[in-house]
Image (tube, rainbow, N blue to C red; front, side):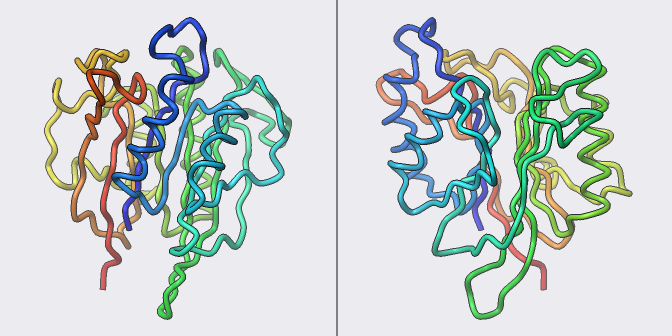
Length: 257
């Protein structure tokens, strides 16, 4: 299966010629070109997510019991309908009170959440696994650490095998990365499994310029049941314009025999 994580950049009129209105059709074309089986998005506001749901009919938008809030930005899974059956899943907040809507703690600038789906492959030899997408806080160092701890504990207790993707807002090898790739959690960095290097060419934030400005903060982590056959940072553009201020990151995965 092909998995992609993609920070959409929230709908913000101050982005001028890079505003959502001018990018949205390019985003649809980019997704259709690379055809991920599972797409995890970040920063999507309700209207943005509804636009993608309408224009990507091959995908089911997994938003379990989500309120139609026009302000908040939510990580969201889009799952190919002909590849997987969604058998469950939910959203919860990365706070001390994960069931409380919009709850946040520590030094988190915004409420942050994780959304996951329990999936079953649609083929005759079916397999069950979890796919999850998240977005950790962009300012709160303490918050990111505790948010990662919540995810790590959840992963150990509830979901194996797991595909975890998102914008983690930290460099590889920093605290968040160490928590999530701890051997007891059992998750592996798809980029490093294939010996991808660390440097400008691996950076995923580029502020709509195409020239990387920040670290490799967009990751796909997987359980050992999955083998990584390919991974790439997608630098798609049309006439010098980019779908977002982040490059999408994509990994091709296979089940180990």
